[in-house]
Length: 123
Length: 113
Image 1 (tube, rainbow over the protein chains, first blue to last red):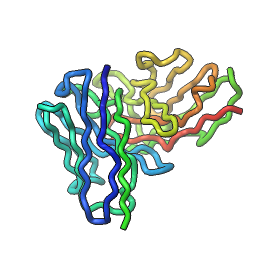
Image 2 (image 1 turned 180 degrees about the vertical axis):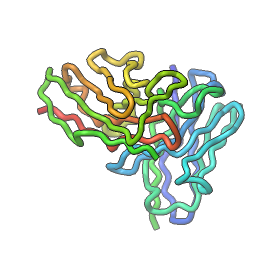
Image 3 (image 1 turned 120 degrees about the horizontal axis):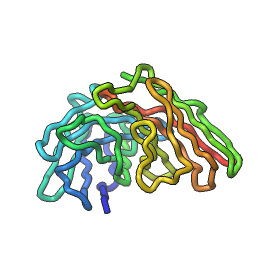
Image 4 (image 1 turned 90 degrees about the horizontal axis):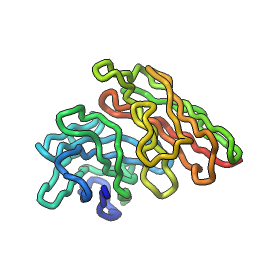
């Protein structure tokens, strides 16, 4: 069955960077976009960006441009999200989610989600 | 950015009764190239990731009970639970994937009356 398994919780100081992983199984990793979505406590879901695991191409929400990098390692079917210059308002649960098929629109619904990783930014 | 606004913010319904959630987008999310509304609905229970219920506004995801249905077009959409069950207590979100950034509604909390 399709699974996305994320790395664990992180605690970071303001100004630091964090790199989260998302390991895919149960399907061909390069056949679907991976997206990242975050959710601060009590807040709505916030889409951050997409990555094509086949090509490595990525697209980011303008809000996160310059601060986010999406990468992947196809040999271990794992996607990564690195967020830099962390601030306290980056404290949130971060999810990876499977999107559409490369070659079609990068904008799509998300049919499988990782379990989420809590990132706490605090001095 | 397309703003997604859900109503109500919370909803208390008796077991077995109908629950309807509304979602309005600030611009049309109908994509003429594929003749589909680029709108999805998710269910999120505490401590869990969102679960896809409905995509393209009205297509039920595999395995989702048929008491869940989606309707609407253009800018106005709704999610209906025809007969509320205890396990349906959750927060429900709509999402537009018409353009970037993909955006979500603020969520509607469904509880048992």
